[in-house]
Length: 136
Image (tube, rainbow, N blue to C red):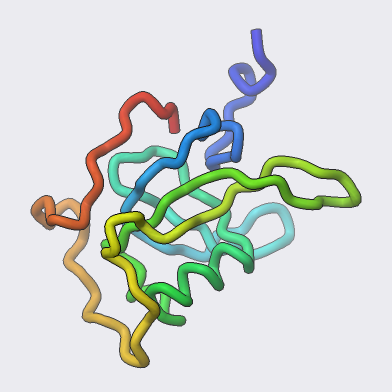
């Protein structure tokens, strides 16, 4: 039995990716209280868990889609893991990359209009297919 099975997390961790790059589409960006801090949490289409978005990942998405998180909704990214330094140790960290299909380009000064809520939107060309065998 794994400890992670006994105490599941509500948030994606690097190990959840199982060493793979996972295409996702941002469905929502919210500020939520975690412990004593307020954190930016991203949610994705077809995924149950959210991702705690650190400054590095937020800056990468802002480079692609603009500073306003409302402009990120409906936009594709790739989730991956990289080795990072944390408290003096090397660990796997969750990172984002731009989509390989060229759907993303450096952000223009103005953000695009906010898309309709996911439940009311039809599948679009930039939506990657769900990756059903990644359990998050």
